[in-house]
Amino acid sequence: MTLPTTDDAQLRTSDTEQEMWDLAEGGNPAEARRAYPSGWLWLTGEESVRSLLAALLDADTEARYGVDDLASRSDLAETEVEEAIDALISLGVLVADEGAYRVNDCAIVYHAAAELSAAVEATGAPDDESGFEYLARLESVRLMLDALLEVDPDRSLAQEDIHRLSGVSRKRVWHHVEKLVDLAVVEESGDEYVVGAASPVVRWVQSLDAAVVGATLAPSHP
Image 1 (cartoon, rainbow, N blue to C red):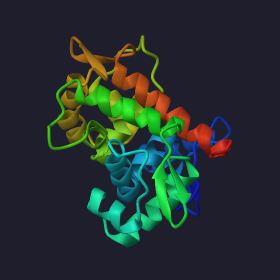
Image 2: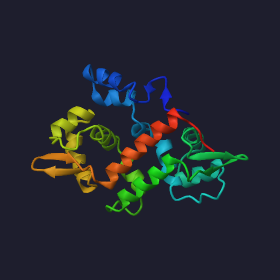
Image 3: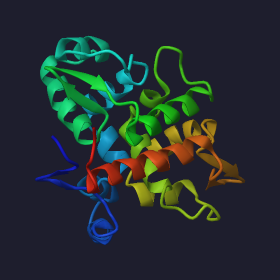
Image 4: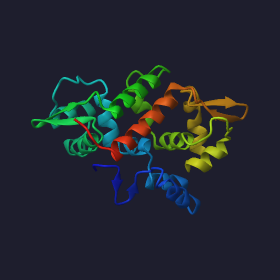
């Protein structure tokens, strides 16, 4: 994996968004979102990419890391790390440096991911897990967040609406929506929910999503 375009997935942009909605109308919205992932979904959907990025958020940006070092930091196999390295280089997060790699802390994707992680941790994420990993670990939560990013902040949503927009099962929406309430991603409004537009978590997910798309459309990294 290098850029967010593969044989079975096409990065969602303004040019491809309607194709996603057309596919969703004829089938499962979750499958449509996977086929046309947003920047947020593409970055977080692959466990190796997600785990390596999470492990790099507190890395020494002056240090150089070999594949074995990165595998140790992320608890991934070296083969998984090698695949994830390609993806993170394409986004400017990692830079190849004389047979090793260093973190590019000037990369917009890296900055947005670090700020998102800090925003989640400020709400009380578990001490043994980064805020980024806590938010992005479960696919149901990733898909729900993806759907909520598109919702007008003035619109009230029932759990049924979140199910319909995201493709996440009703049971999983019911199970995970409280996590999003705790993170201020959504706010309760009677029996419904509204997107917490002022929430730092929402703002940084939006920023990260835009950063991934921007880095892909105009890849220019040191």
